[in-house]
Image (cartoon, rainbow over all chains, first blue to last red):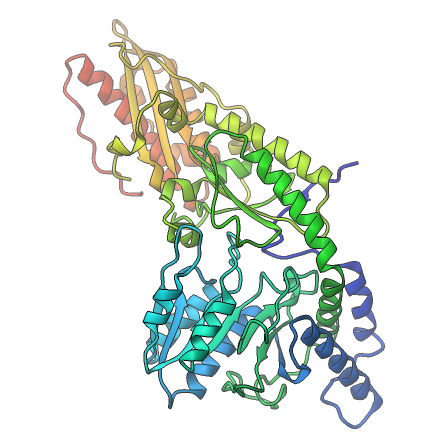
Length: 405
Length: 139
């Protein structure tokens, strides 16, 4: 029996794997010690558990355990990575290069840096969501200290050419930071092969608990340092003070171990389901995939259904299917997704988009149900849409002078 | 954000979806909003010349659930009203009836604008002067 509601918003967060919870439970109850308590068994147990998790996390991304700084999540890791480099390397320069499609945790951090005397270049992306490597190289100047480009986009799943980006950075002696929140655990990420100097990621996007994430900080070739953004007990090698979230970290470690074990089989199964969903939905007229289909995360699809509005569309089935839309009709600004707009999509198409994030627990039955529910709703709403009627009558909508609104 | 039951009901069972013959002299058509803003409403009224009564009303809307509900409700209210009474429909009564939250007030404004635009279209077609409305404040 199909159980409703169906969860297809795995880019927002994922359901925790029961095996992760199982690993965490003892660290809430009997092993509750503070990992910084050096003088008794409670502290020793906690420290041991954190060390083991640090190895599990490091292994997934090909890092050394000493290069893992635990944080409260990816947003904190983004802040620590970018602001920490900006402060630490102030003597070298003040210029950061990023892209317009980054997550708000990176963009707003960069905005903050501009306010405190930094200079930021925001690279445009093409229709697929990819930056132009020539633009990147041209933007580098003697004062450039950091390139902050995400590994994979949260709305469209587009995977950036991180290896090529880091090769350019290395040539110019610039550090590379990447927000890999959506990529780690889903596709192979190796900080050495990819040439990454700093990387933010989080547990809850890979079937781990919320409230724990990590910043990878390279220790060799080159040795990278960040200025701490929080004062306190000097935990995490002085880079991030605060009592460690031991159960969370244990869960994060377990989640990483499971992702490593299951990545190949998960990817194979999930991408097949994604392709099935996408193929079926593209049978609808005037349906378009947003972002690159070639350089894309295996579990993501972002599709616009022309002449129906995303929020109205969601309302047709959101009791039964959890999805998100690029239409920001719920926000006061009424602005649609800035990521979709950066691809050059018109506001109308951006308003008409749905984001699908499949995951480890997605089943074929759920996909079949979703295809039917969405197709039915799109057809129903188009019957109700004046734009669809005009389109069907052959009227070019761009020639209409819309009343100012 | 959760919708009120009335919005959900109008969304699931919209009243008076459809198209009237816009070339007909007794039909007034109002098309308001813009695709870039995420909502476009087309509201049409059919008027009995002799009595000045609205005999039919239809809509089509591209937009969120609240926009669809606002236009559906507007057509219900328009049917059987005189054109003069239709002019008195105020967006705030739509807000109250549908329990629209503040971020959705613009949907009701759009519906009010659509009513006015339809009436003016009817008036213009029939040699009457267009009514000049004050610019809506909320957009």
